[in-house]
Every structure is written in C-alpha cells, then in structure tokens.
Length: 312
Image (cartoon, rainbow, N blue to C red; front, side):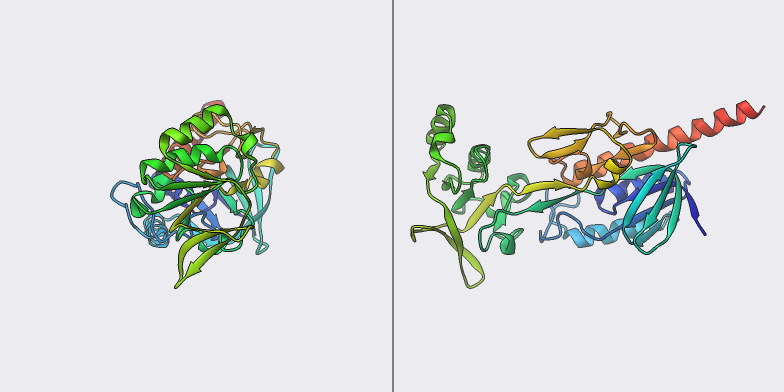
C-alpha cells in the first residue's frame, strides 16, 4: 500500500525537523525520511545557536525528533531513492526499503557532503583540530597557533577571517602558486600578520592524539595546533535534479534557485538548509525549514478552500 501525506520532508537535520515541527503543529500529516548523515556529525558541539550553544549535534537532533514526534509526525530511518511529480502536481516517492509514499508537497533538506583535501590526517581530524568555520569553532580554539591549508586562492579570505580569533596564523599555500595571489591579497595578509608558506603539504603531524604540526614535502615541519581548511562542498541535489529543478552554479557547487520561502522552480517543492546553499549554519537551516513549512501549509489550506468553492 502507498501511504499518503500532506508533506514529505526528505532529510532529518535541523532544517527538516524544524519544518516537520511546524507541519505537526499545523495538524498536517507529515513524514520525515532521514538517511542519518548529518553534515555536522564530526563536530563534538554545535555553536552559535541561541540557548543551544555547546550542545552535541546528536543530542540536538534527538531532542528535535522527540518534539516532532510529539505532534504526530512520522520519522523513519530510510533514504528516498526516487521521486516523480504526477499529473495532479503531487509526488510519488520510493524509499530504499521499497516503501512507496505519496505526498501533496515536498520539502528537500538533504544537505551536502564535505570532501576534504587529500592530505593525510586532514579527514581523520576534521571536527576536532581540523576545522572549517571560525564562527562555529573559533572561540573554542582562540589564541592557538592556527594553520590554514589553502585549497584555492579563495583560501586567503579564510586566512584573513581567522585572524579575528588568533594573531598567530600561517597560510600554507599547498597546491596554490604564489603567483595566483593578487597584490591586494598579499597586502592584506601582511597587514594581518599572516605568515605565508609556499610548498605542498605532505601530512599533518599528530602526537598523543593532538595536532602538533604541518609537514611539507621538503620535510620541514611547522608547529601548529589547529588547522583550518575549506572542504569541497558536494550538494545532495539528486532528487531536485530528477524533478527538473533549476540550479544555479556557485563557487561552492550547484544549488537550486529558490524564492525567499525556499520554493524551487518546481511547483510544490521547497529546499532548505544546506540543500539550498553552502553557508547555512544550524540556526539558519532551522529558520529556513520553519519558513518553508509555514508557506507549504498556507498553500495547501487555500488550495483546499478554492477546491471547495469550485465544487459549490
């Protein structure tokens, strides 16, 4: 049998659970399908979320699921492998388990995956002393000796940003040639006191389960206790592409074109959180999920009223 819902929420992170909470409180029959792959899983704590600052991500999600299920929303650990829009403008979805679902509307909160630079030690220590976001982690590592592993010339921006949290910052150019840095880049780095080290990074030096340095291909070791780098973002937009959603190319991947509520170019389909943009933090994602769900609920309400009027 195919279960029918007012809304299918694909993804059970902050955006998806926030959307589900709004839908449950609006007395909508909603289903959350969660593959259990949150982007912030490597982090010990989430930061910058008012009243939840320092909370472990797993605890945050567990509390969210309890709240959502309290309003009758169903949450299943599964994966949506296919979705099609039918002639009535509604949606049929197939789950990895083989379950078939029909939903009047769809909210996609599938997020993104971070691909780390291929330097031994970087992926293994990501979320500990290898970090990507100073707003997420800068306070906790303030005044430590920072390294910044360049992935592109845009890494200069990251190196300059982290000087707000430490004045001991070294930019490792790695595979970026010095000639790729602009005169403005060089002047700003000098003004900020950032040391610039050319040469490819061979590996991280780890002692007693702590980052202690960065080793270059030439064998030199530069003592550092924290390393910032910019992972390559891989948006999980497969379902949106399957539905024909318009995507926009950005320096951080292709993301759906949306209106301010998160509505994509496909009628009845919203995107929220990192499925809609690279820089969405947990608090932003929760807000976007709320906004999408409230818009969805209003659309269904007036669609049903207009249908009743048409029937006389």
